[in-house]
Amino acid sequence: MPKTVPALLAQILVAFSTPRRLTRAVGLRFCVHKLSRRIIAVALGFSLSAQAAGPTVMVSVGHGTEPARGKAVREIVASRRQVVDFVPLPAPGVVSTDLIAIEQRSQAVRHALTRARKKESEALWDDCVREVAGAMSDALEVIATTGELALLRDLHLQAGVCLSLADQVSGARSHFRSAALLDETPPPAGLHREEAERVQVEARNEILARPKGKVKIVTEPPGARVLIDGHEVPGVTPLEADARLGDHFVTLRRFRYESNTEQRLLQPFGLIRVNLEPARRSTLGAQLLAVRYAQAPAPSAEELFLAEAAWSRAEQVVGVTRAEGSSNYRLSLTETATGKSLRSVTLSRAADDTATRRTVCDLIGETCEAPAGIPWYVWPLAGAVVAGGIVTTAVIIENNRDARFCAPSGCR
Image (cartoon, rainbow, N blue to C red):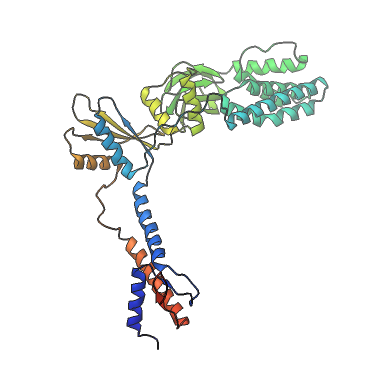
């Protein structure tokens, strides 16, 4: 006779409270208690990992800070955020795939120029123009990365020569003007046919007749070096530079930011505004190596630290310093990509552990109150596991009336 429902449920609950299993008559080893524990452990792990969510952080302890205080701040931050340390820089001889690709594009442009000059010597004007046109996009990619303008200037000159010899003077003048804007120096004579060189001189004279004046260049953030058509302008942004009316390649370079090269229409007494993009990790590595080996000007200590933190994949920096003229501490939170200050607080030197924790948590935007018991969302998960186990066991027992609950050592 099957047992009554209350007695059956009571026996099932007893089975869940101890690590028991069904007999082989059911055909399954169903260790429900162990399964329940694993699922609850996953839920608990999720609740604990949620505490470490948020931006990755690097902790910087300044000179004059007591070691015990710096250690306490780091431990509190680590309880709520993932804390990272400095990552070593790559070896000096390592070349990135981006630089390899740019060098291959440069080689492709040089080969195209060689073929175009050969076509010119063979009086194959149309083929010469096609060779040059096919290499223009690669030359623009090279300029955007390296700022090297010579290849593009030579392409424009070669296109102008072949177009003028093919009786397409209008197109030839356009290319000669572009070349003259990139380089106003007088072109060497005797390299091409006389009719082509005559059109080139006329186009250059048109450029020299254009007005020239000051152009203001502003960047966000400021402090960028400026190159116009490959020639560096003294100073850093914001600044004013002499420029002739027309399209010029303007290059902006700043530590911790991507180099920016674009073709821009410069007008005397005009204004250029550019928002710089934070440097990618590969760019940061190259910039830091250049500073280390004195291949680039050394930035400020703060700029260098932010670059090293971003290279180490820290999204924010928590700084601990002694406030000037005070015995208290200044705690700051800074965004590594932009150097923007997010928050700053003052920590009393006499603060106890509770006050220190509260201050640090306010800085990083956390509530660091100790959790009371198991988080609320774990209980529904645990209840669902138990209820599912009860239903499954009831179904199995209903289909196997001769099933018995036995201890792990077996049935008597």
